[in-house]
Length: 198
Image (cartoon, rainbow, N blue to C red; front, side):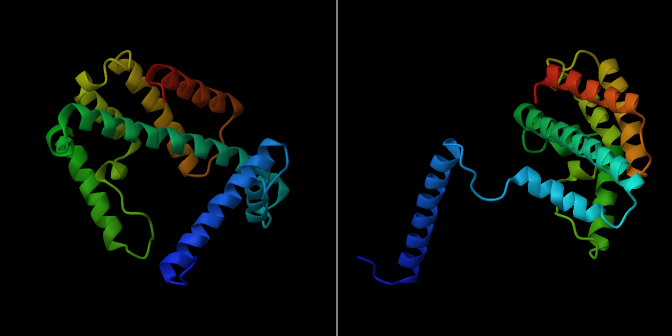
């Protein structure tokens, strides 16, 4: 019997939500669409965001947005790998013990600048998220024993990161890449995925 208390009301609400979600799963498994298709909603939002621009700009913008998303995922998965490996092998103070001093100072200055410019909203993040892309390879190389079982050689690492950084910077300055460059980046990320397994 419901007692009408706020806790009971909340419990009832959550329970009904869970029941509804379970029913939706049954409908979906039967091939009945429930809710808005997420992929279609994302495409519609992107089309709407690009609608002020000429048709000639929209296609390249969508193509570059896809590549940006791939590079964003790659770069941040490398950060996650570094953090996981360093925590596992060195402990909580891995940043202080194992990151080159120049990289630490650079990250700290970027974080301070971010905090000073509080008008620019962004989620607070650990110092590794203030490190430039190329510095991620430096951190890995500086702690090679923690990564040598995943990555063939430091040369292999450096070569791919140098290429990826050039492309990343190209995209950051809104320049359009040719098709063969898209393929090269996709190949490098596929190579990395095979080696590291993310």
